[in-house]
Length: 446
Ligand code: ADP
Image 1 (cartoon, rainbow, N blue to C red):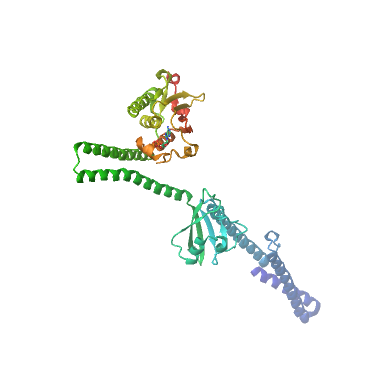
Image 2 (cartoon, protein in one colour):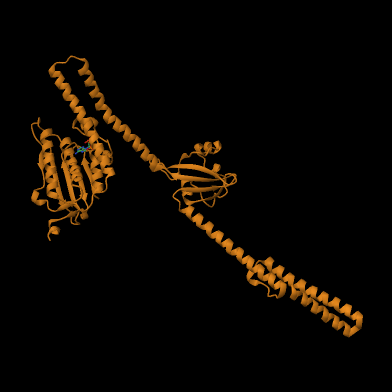
């Protein structure tokens, strides 16, 4: 400011000096006036340059000025720079937040006061079939036409979610999404969507499972209670009594098997995976499976004219060791043999085999000449309580859980269960063990 005043004063003195030199006292006044006008126009011109620069907004083309206007230019430049840095920081933060929302496994839609889409992430676009760009500022009510959603939106009670049919599903595998609105700020709302297909499926499976278990237990229990009542109310002769007690024992055994298998399944689900450090001789494993199979076969065919025809691998041909849980492996492999025994009529052939593949994997298989299984049943055989013929399974003491247990054990050992069958000709159940769970006699040598 001082400099500015000095400049003005200097101009005046110069004007006055020149005026005095030219025309005495009048000259002094005229000189001062001319100097003031020149100073004024110069100042106006400098101010106009600054204003023009601010208007164009091109901060890099700042006019080179001294004095007050120069300082004004410099300060404006710094202020704008600071604002630019702040704006850039805000933009970066916004980009980060949007990128995080974009990475969310849930659908996120930001709605304005009128329920129009301000922004949505890719997951929401997939759930609702939106086009993130095209549908911007479209009303959510016009885009999501499901009657459940319209009713939910109209009720304005967003304390719970609503489950809708999502886009991208097929008739056999519909996609279900849970949608909930969360109001915030000044009348805006956040709409969150979540794929609940798997959850709903698990829920349905759990319900089916509970219904199945109840049914499996209730049936023998009802029969058992009927016998108890008969024994309590009717004066029976000793022979009848004994027969009834026999039947009761059968029903109790059936319930016991179901409970036992259910416990096995839950133990398998809850226990850690069998390690690869416990090695067991394959020969011992197959030998105990053979003994169990033969004993069951004798029992099943004791009243028949002909027993089963068996073929087992010769003990010396089974070499090496297998890693995992001996108990689980034995129960799974014996289960396959026991199924073959139970479903193959007396006189039929059952062949158990073990062989190593060239890549080091090992295959255990049980082939029978039983009734075989129609191809439509094959994919469902390992489901819990799935049976082709309920009465046949029950007659042979089945629970419908055997193959579910086998599948579990097999998976826990990194193996694969394969079933092939031709109706009327027989079935083959094979378990293919990975090479890293097997070691041959050769590898065992020090
Ligand atoms: P279950 O206790 O009823 O035998 P599983 O889970 O072991 O239950 O077997 C499921 C169904 O698969 C059986 O009910 C039976 O219909 C069929 N199945 C299993 N093994 C054989 C087999 N070797 N031959 C024919 N059908 C079989």
